[in-house]
Image 1 (cartoon, one colour):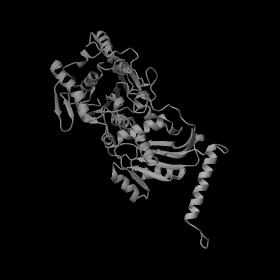
Image 2 (cartoon, one colour):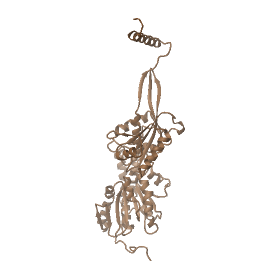
Image 3 (cartoon, rainbow, N blue to C red):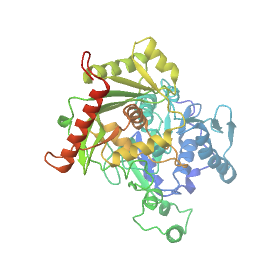
Length: 469
């Protein structure tokens, strides 16, 4: 007896007649984890739409996850509307819930993934298939939690029973690092998470017959070469790194200090970037004073040693307080600075858990803080140690937003923000004072005569009791 009441129900249309040839290998793959690493205009979103319509199970919900629900609708619904005109597919749309239901009863649920609560919408459900689109633009921490803790268990009920599992798709991310890079195995390696990876470019899409000529024209217009990062990422579908658009890419020399070289004394600050709908981040910064004589002056400047960084998706205040206490105890911290953007959580940590958090007023100063951190990285006043992998990942990947006044909202920047608060607390102490002249020189004798004169004048103005004038 069949497991499915709708097994005999078939569509009167075949959307695969216009699918690019490279998608046939995806259909034949039996792995429940698939990744589509594609350049622009390769046909991947059209393939996802027909995958839902043709292989979705009637009566079941199939999530389509993008950065926001509106973005998911903007990506998918126009393609479904095109199929309605070209193939006779019938779809009913519910804009309030973000669902599209085909004439076969396949329910496509558009969803966003920009906050932790949105992950919970995936958790505890059962789905024949889930698609994550534009994975390179998503917050990698949220994507990891949603993918492996929510979506993967949710598709287990349909393994071998008509489901198509999980499909992750997108173009290469801005930097060759992060979960999406690991899923794809870079440009030519094997996936670190068991995905079968399929690659395609605009040249593999037969609906654009003059693709090669288009690319040559575009390269001439933009003055691109085959090695230009924008061309490699967007059209060739290759991971590459360009420091032009990164906030800190050109400022940091990528030197990582050995952990055993960390200073054992100094002013220690722990900074917390509070995240209610995003990961929390901690930085342990130990400040020391570096003295150096330059010409006739002694320069004293503060060096911020970033000893450890952490970034975690926390599910409770108790977990946040526990990590904070452990760091304070381990490093004997003098100060604890917290992000005040979501003040309720900070107040609870202060009132309920007794943490001595000093609030950092960050509103309106993000661009200035980025510039300050750039300068300190460039002149070596911020030194990063081995236990700071989350911070290193962010410094080497986070780009500017479109207005160049903040980090790009699609990239994880929580450790960078946390370091901003620590640097603001420590600030860059720069003191300049004259260097003492060498003994025996004219300047030395002139200084001694001047000091003697000052003492004689002071003694004359303030005689001791009983002393004759």
